[in-house]
Image (cartoon, rainbow, N blue to C red):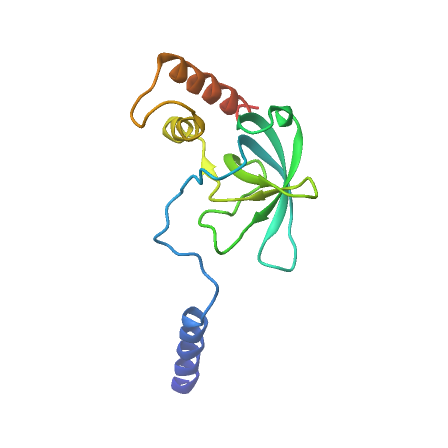
Length: 159
């Protein structure tokens, strides 16, 4: 009985200590300014694959940067679950800010972390795409835009 208990402890230790591909736990949500598109949207469907990354169907709510014709349309975003990107996992019905690049096949590829929809994060997203304002400067029109953006994005969640 004692040997069985020792074997069980060894097996559990090996299981929890074994090397796995893990994301760094020290990373933060960050917005990559090189993204060709920034938008809020809701994940409608996830398509998992055998590889670590997977794709999903996202209903675009509001486009902050990029082609505004994507607003209120459904797109395919690839690169969810990428171990090189912190916070890249999503679930169905998640509403997030997506920073993506347009691929040749018309799909979108995740550039950086999917970001929670908060006033602070929306403010940062809008600030990252503004042209002509110095860091720290803002106008009252920008804050009105942020609040409209927040209300529109959150209306998706209140269904």
